[in-house]
Image 1 (cartoon, rainbow, N blue to C red):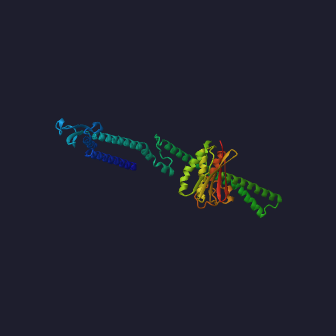
Image 2: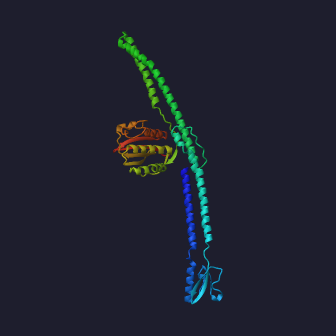
Image 3: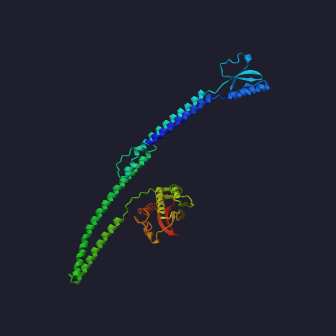
Length: 405
């Protein structure tokens, strides 16, 4: 707000200074002895000298020419000057520009511009600066986890959609937090329950194992029964372990996909506009190969998100020399491949790279969560497509298979 106030004061002062300079220039012009009427009077004298006559219509600033025959040559209510031509004196009357009208016109225009400028500044302050000031602390509060921070409703067309989007973001964060807490609670209860259930078969295994080790079962039939009991209890424990593994590997993220149709060119334009300036600064060659535009059956926003994840990975794990997007068409699908140079991932790791939280051997020096390719796979599956990776000529390639509409 203070910066806007300083800008307003600076612009107003500059406007006033400009108005003062213009008025000073007009005053100097008014007081200047030079004028067109003097030039025309000199031409008139030349015509009289040469021709002995003159045509007053050729001199728009001269209103009359008088001699001594017309009376007192030095008496007139109009502006005049005395010239000498052909041995006689002439009184030449003239008009000068109406500087008052010029003053009024210029100052009137400046006044109108000043009013427009004040109205514009007031409009900007009321509809942009003040609403933005009310929203200034909201992102920080959300980042701190304060989801109860009040977000004022704005009807302004500049911030109405923005505040609506921030409210949606807050609701989404709150919903995800609730789901996460519920999921953590359910998993904790499951683990506690399974750990308790495991104790019973484990105790039976230990008892039978001790009995066999001490030779308490002399009868071969008893020994066989004890061994079968150990095997059955081991199966129970294996079942419990499978349940724990399944619970741990269940999807922990919800993905919402709205299927529709989208032009490939529109999606690629979004990607290029986002990454071309960044890669240009880092001197990374960013190439989108030639392609034939087509309509894809997908969620355009989610497909763009997949491409963003792939390019982010290419930036993090490539050598920064070249990132390329290639295209192919096969069996009613569009194949979009993101390729980067400088791959250091081992081929044997390819089957695991789409798993959640998996990070390859080349990720030691790069920050990340190991979720980028996992999210790509989940989204492509929900959109009825596929994703796969390959390594060729020390380049890492990830291909999105998207159905054509």
